[in-house]
Image (cartoon, rainbow, N blue to C red):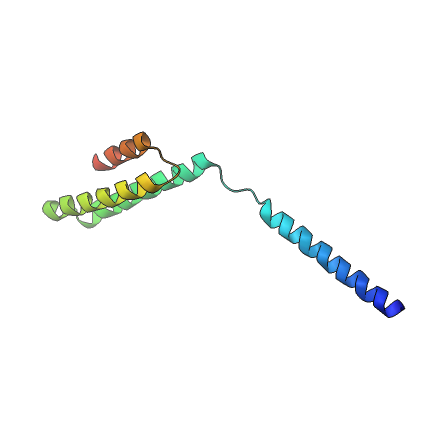
Length: 98
């Protein structure tokens, strides 16, 4: 009988430990929306600058690649939950001015 109670105690402690681990995973803090938004903006700016530096010698090809990038960025931004329509347009205009 004492053997069974030891097994039950160990099982109980394992379940409690598992519950604590699952609770901690669910309460992990994520980044605030404004930080995620800033990271996304910085990433688009970085990609545009990288594109410009790659094709700076051929202005015609650069213009073509910029248009392709802006179309893709516009599509992605309009599907992104962090940006409303006006913010997406403003970012596209900023990127186009590079």
